[in-house]
Length: 165
Ligand code: S3P
Image (tube, rainbow, N blue to C red; front, side, top):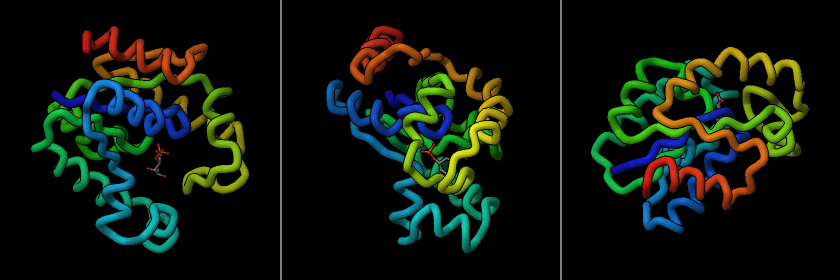
């Protein structure tokens, strides 16, 4: 059995994924990391040298490769579910869990961090608009966890409870 964490950048997929994997004996895999290792180049450089469409193709291929996995927590980049048939493929790989973080928490988490689609300086409106445009797709996950007032451990506990792990 696999668990697939989806949600906006800065919603805590990597952090929560690590903790959940540690506490429940899953292995962890992250599509952004897979792509960086395979290409031997950072996501930032892929976006700047080859463009977003090229990245989305690599992301699709990385997701296809996950189909043979078992006992993994899979964390996918925030945009993955918006492209190709990735959401359907991910649903076939495991139970999809949407980490639904409020924009305030997302902004806090992204502070000082670079993301290709946002850049160095975060434009709040741009980010809100992107989240808005993706929200209904995220909600198609099997399970939604509202992380607004939850600590990392509390979020992990909620996933454990929701999935009866
Ligand atoms: C993206 C999110 C990033 C990364 C890429 C594009 C997006 O992953 O895949 O920069 O479209 O939201 P995180 O969600 O891990 O930040």
